[in-house]
Length: 265
Image (tube, rainbow, N blue to C red):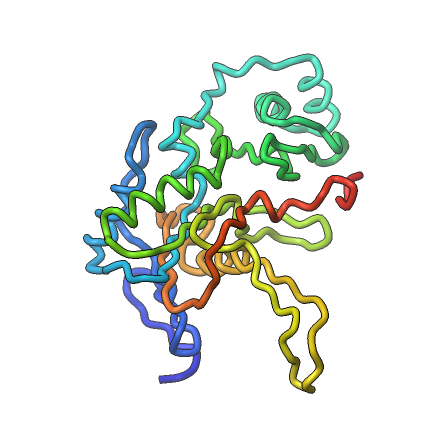
């Protein structure tokens, strides 16, 4: 078996260095408001002939979390303010999306060429995370109201049903202001610390690292995207096994930079 071994089914299962395994969950149904997402994910794990083990990480696209929590808004129910109209006309944006982004924000940092906002959770992002990708027709998907709390609830259900100690990461796709292209990042997590700390470890030349903080939940979110995709693949959940991590009380909110350190201030 090669160090990077790829097994093919209908979709791809990835094994990295014969240790970390990333497996997509096929068969997640269309999620509707009020659905018990934890139970649905567990049932799908069973239908895929999988079993959760201690230390597994369940990575979930925020879209289905938002749908289960009723965070979907139909275009006809959106009231467009004068400010939303001005921003939309100036930048050729959808005024409905702008109106929702303003409503979901606590502060607007940029209105020209991009609509950069601060959400209630302190996350700085484009359009407050409001998106129409994978939303029902004529609708928009909002971020969960509290993605860390959502991750905690789903984790509690999965642990209760499986009897195993696991972690949950909720992800969103986001661009980066200093690089082209978008990638998955963590917007919520539970049962796993947001960061991994290398301070005090030695490098290849036996020098002690003075500072090295890795955002492991972002790394895992991006890794899961290798098997879930961003478009119409219909696979919003992946299970990662074999990754050694520290659990603790850190959340995805801890990833947000202080406002005085951000690029847009």
